[in-house]
Image (cartoon, rainbow, N blue to C red; front, side, top):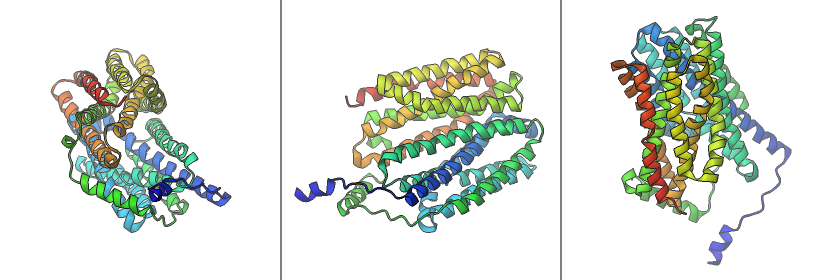
Amino acid sequence: MNTKTSNTIEQPVPELSNTERKQQRQSLITASTAHAIHDGMTDLIYVLLPIWQNQFGISYAIAGLMRGVYAGCMAGFQIQASKLSEKYGRKTLLVGGTALAGIAYLIAGQTTTLIGLIVALAWAGIGASTQHPLASSLVADAYENDKSRSKSALATYNFAGDIGKMALPAAVGVALTWWSWRQSVGFVGIFGLAVAIWLSWAIHEKNHARTTAGTTSQTKTEAENATAGRSSLSYSIGFRALLATGVVDSATRMGFLTFLPFVLKDKGANTATIGLALSLLFVGGAAGKLVCGYLGRRIGMLKTVWLTEILTAIVILCILLLPLNIALMTLPVIGLALNGTSSVLYGSVPELVPAYDRSHAFALFYTGTIGGSALSPIFFGWLGDHTNIVLAMQCVAAFVCLTLPLAWIVNRELPE
């Protein structure tokens, strides 16, 4: 008993030197830059899809497939990127992934076939897969001995991704009024390569030894062995309902974002306007993380999810009915609802599973939500091809309402 008690006593945190503070800032700046460029390149695809539809004569289903290929490759290779970083180092993988995404965009700007473009998007997705697991761990490690600033540093890193989502699609949307899409995409590729070169100079990664107490390591290993191979069916009905809620929410978000540019295009929007529209939406999304986090604490998960999902359905229907200028004004509102819901759902995972099982539960949750986001554009695109894009978006609005009874089940299982 005495030994266990002494192991849990927190040691005083030593005061950091100016050199250590500088290293922290350097790590945060490099990780945030990587986050901004990768998220910007990822969401730039939404601006380009209507242009590629005209260029290659693709259907809505193929447009959804193109977005799904990028998202699927980005999600599917994150675990591999983490494993490879243990052998080759995070700097090597992060720089290489950024360079690969830049080269893929250069190839996309030069290809003359649809197959070539899809292959380029797949490679860009693989390159983007290195960013989230490695850049975020750089920040976490840099602030490991400074817990008071760790959360604010990670929040800054997360916000940098929102900056990239807002800036790059808007910039390319404006550039497309003068340049062709090939020139614009090629410039993005060059920019990505330039960032990769800068990262190779700016990242000063020290060998980080993950040292933990022997009993902690043993407990973690036992927990990992105990949870290996478990499926969502092994968990409580509350967690399974939460997973289903996350899948529906993620599928709705990706379906809406993929086909919003086509709806705006039918209303008369040009590429610059579409870029502006996405920036307005992502501004609302950045605010949604703060607003819904506050609402979740004040009124609870159930009321927050019901509020945001009902708001999402209503605003989607309004966008379909309203003229272009007024529809643009509603985008920050739906951005807030779309992005805020996911923050509340993620925060409920630890409340529904025991502490030793949370890593595996989070892995299941992310796998499910990412899978939903990769498949939904293909389904709703197919629906748009066989009916029309307006009806497909109406189905997106109806689909999100499935979260309402699911969230009620989750709330019933949450501890008081």
